[in-house]
Image: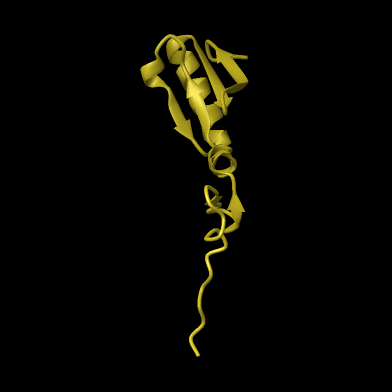
Length: 90
């Protein structure tokens, strides 16, 4: 007898299956979980120089380097400022 894989989301209309857990969940919850570990290094004076990474240590190093070059940079996560550097210092 062949085993059938049952999609846990098949019976839920309008509900997406969470790729992280494999269970039904609201789409925006899954998307928030996937982007939670992205850090943006934002340079207000030169937005084109801004970068994104999943490594927090790398984000802080980039922030320091970019603040030395452009005067000010921020580390953000989901739009919230975690911290910043001005001219290579806190």
